[in-house]
Length: 148
Image 1: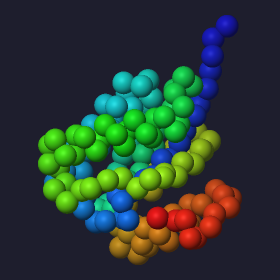
Image 2: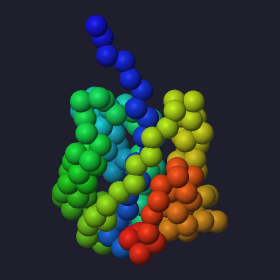
Image 3: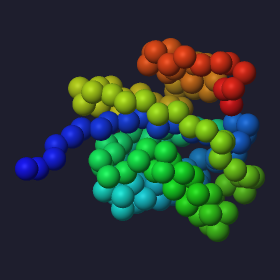
Image 4: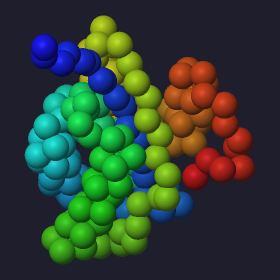
């Protein structure tokens, strides 16, 4: 018997203290690198995009991959690559945590459009407000003291 699944996620994490250090010139290289990391883990990335202090990943996650391990591996590998290639000279670390939201496949196009338009979105909404909105939309209880 074969296994079938559709595990569509939006993963969001940012720089330490949401420092605005991810300069535009390095972002595409970072996104391409993350795309390769995901594909190597048999995941299917749909879009990766962000702004100067955080990024969003829309991806299907292979059932053999644990979400927490995936995010940890992405953060570790990209931290090394960012420093090695000097993509973001003022980058120090990623934030300790991350947010992940699961979606029905019917939401895929809406999510891709949302992530593709991050620059415009953040002309109106700051990062913390966006995170609160995502948590509320996904009915996740949170304590504002621990939002970073």
